[in-house]
Length: 400
Image (cartoon, rainbow, N blue to C red; front, side, top):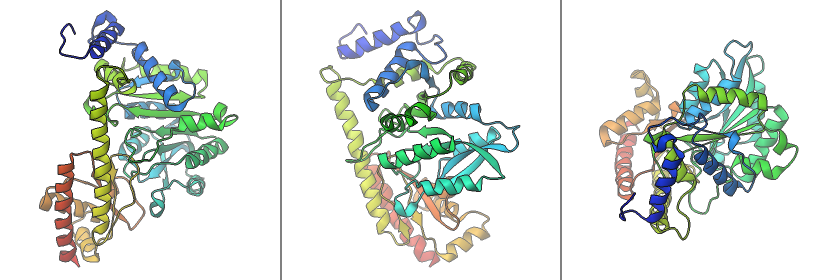
């Protein structure tokens, strides 16, 4: 910090952050909710993003967004309740949240995203899912992922409004997983649930209970190993907030270096700062690479026989659908595995490409998918698509 090898704003930031730590050291404990100055930075970021009030006392920094989601789920899931408490979960959905609900004794209430409509979330399907829970469990919350994982869909403002109206009518707690908000491709715009809720005004803005999540590991920062995220709670009763404080206090605090990374994410260099130009160059390169990879993956996968991929508006993955030949499906059954797992295993063994089968995320009966990550350099993406094309052509010929 005393040399001239780093831009002056970087050194000033480091001094300010160390000054925010007890004893001027990153080795110290912090407040349960996080370092107050960094919590304030998160609150200011939300205000800039949404144009709506945000209060530091409603924000908790955690060791990653999934840790926050699990803690909030603990507030509403009662393993001893009869009937069990449940959560409406999108299908497909990344498995970690599902495992958390099951571990806490909750029930999964699946609602299906409409693949043929670009994985759109339709309120009619939410009504169907809620009706299906009667006699099975008592749903208390609705979980949404925007942008989607693994689907890559991006909700419109109109869609978000419809969801908010639904949870208000059904008196459900709204859990908005928005960790991929920095990964929005091309001219698409991310609009947060908090922003739409505020714009809708009373009674929605004053009554709908919302927990929104973000993470340092899923944005352009991409610092997955630092495990830092936050949750902002809206319209939660003060008596309940006391329990939130208790939950976030039991494991002391989030890693200090993760909190520092979170501060850099929510409060990046600004125009006029010495490091702003380099920051802009780096982030634009990441976004340009993602856009290129998303477009190329969409183009190539849709050119393959028996493969259909919906457009990707955001997120870090593509999730194409596979129309597997009957012989391949039979071969998988003989091997005692799911057809999409069989396909992914062969893809790994024959082409050296590591993917995730759709059955890990949930999918409609009789459909098969595969998830690819597009967070790679352009050259790597092109090599992946080349190998995929070669493998898929041979695979389809083998089992046709």
